[in-house]
Length: 519
Image 1 (tube, one colour):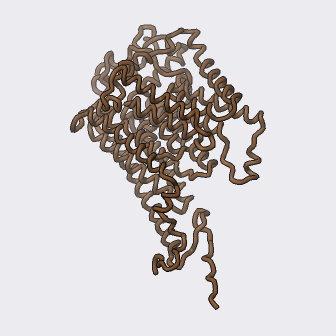
Image 2 (image 1 turned 180 degrees about the horizontal axis):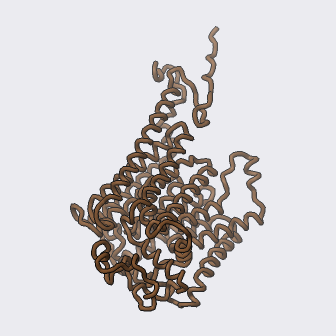
Image 3 (image 1 turned 45 degrees about the vertical axis):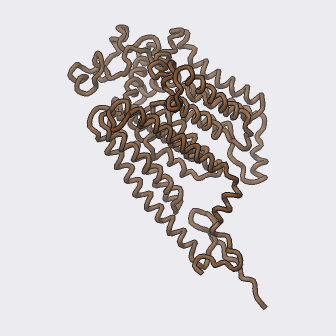
């Protein structure tokens, strides 16, 4: 009488996952492959640090050679590949320790040099110094005679030092030295805090506090991913890229603070994912608790907008989640933070709080409609390009507002909005991509990282001669990124059932009459 074979025993795999032992040793091979991934990740991390050293050692001031673009692209490729290996590696705890160690090492390495792509940190230092002297930063430009007593030999060096290292009119390290500041009031408060707080001298002080904000962003990503039942090691897809090591670590861009506040708003608004009926019941927060979370989320988002204005794109994604009262509460909290932080400056200088913003839009070509590279590649310029850009963002906003919150979480809706803005506005500043990258990691839509990387060829080509036609390179970088996002979206749109049929589960027993692996 035939006997039914006993099922394969289930035993705990490394990292607490469940694995089915098979006669062909599939589990052993999986463990070996995950160990190999860990070794590969360690090699990749060493490579990322080596590339960072090469970037910091490039001669010249800021963007001076085409090699900087090649190294940055290589950094992106190796950083993403290493992050993928870390997520796949085992033991999980060791992979996590490797990731965190490398993250800290990248930021520590950034402190050994000056800025590499941008000199914006000098303006941060100046604004903080002006405010510490009791002067409103929106009142005067750096070269105005009223600020003579505030100038120092670091930001305004003598003629020899200025000509040698920082060629600027009137010998200053500040860009646009005649313009009033462009940065909103929460960013200004941050600059003042950095000026007052202890730390290393000059550039390194700003780098230190930007790096601390970046490390906090990595920690928030890890915690939020974990509460959503996802692998916290996915934070490496931000932590190992040039966004963290170059734009934040070396260049100290304040955008990291805006991203940190914006993600904090999303985390506050959306509670952790429940894993059981009991957990779901316990997560049913009381009305006062829900109201507090809503007001906290609104306050954090308002603060993010008052760091850099573009986190305002997240509003449709967040007001579409919850009741009408929650939407009103969120908007009121955000408006209160923005209004209260601007109020003292408005009382002091009036409309001067707009600072350099109108001129900035003109310099970047947005007011003429010449900045929209993908639309220009399609033959749209001027008013037509502006109209199409507004139409695209309006369409995405409507889609976000109408999306089912149970199917489209806030971070994914926010990613749609920020990503659409990037693909239409095609910004030249790579550091704007910090928020986009953080949303891509949190939403599990890593293809959008290619859009964040697309700004580097555009930006670097503005300052150094690269082989080939510069305009074609700039359009192509964003066109390739858009194609990657579109192709991935189309792949996801294939019904899951069809994908399962095309890619059968290797752990499923083979049908009768078919030989399995190792037969």
